[in-house]
Image 1 (cartoon, rainbow, N blue to C red):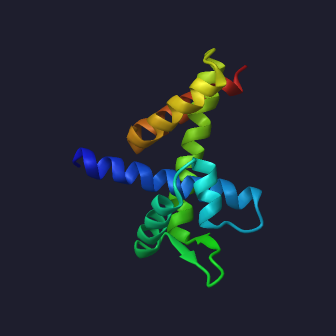
Image 2: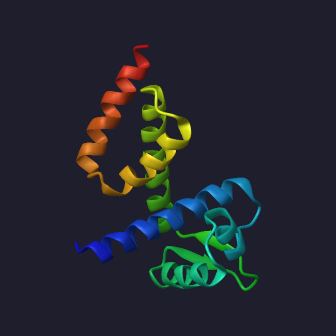
Image 3: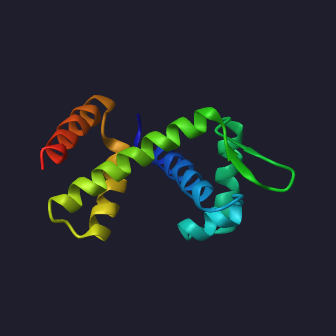
Amino acid sequence: MGYIQHKSEESLEDYLETILILSRRLSVVRSIDVATELDFSKPSVSVAMKNLKTRKYITVSGDGYISLTETGKEIAEKVYECHNLLTDWLVHLGVDPETAAADACKMEHDISQESYDAMKKCILSILKDQ
């Protein structure tokens, strides 16, 4: 996968994760909510939402309310779980929470499923034993 394609997939995952987080916090999610949360311009978010809709990761109601499809939700939950696990682990290791969250955001997109599963098993085992 080329660099541009990789960055595109990373961005897609960030949007899906943000929609998931917002849907847990708000009664409805709109493009403006995503733009505000990510501090992105409304036109940039509009283009991204069109892309997500075309790829069938989201649906958008006539009122502009965004919902994740099953596929979109599956991706978002996977990224969100990875982000939280990596953030918690880095904080546990003594990393500042803000730095840990920023680093986890970078790591969550690049780690293979095999490596993530092995890390998750190890981290949960260590945390359980404490």
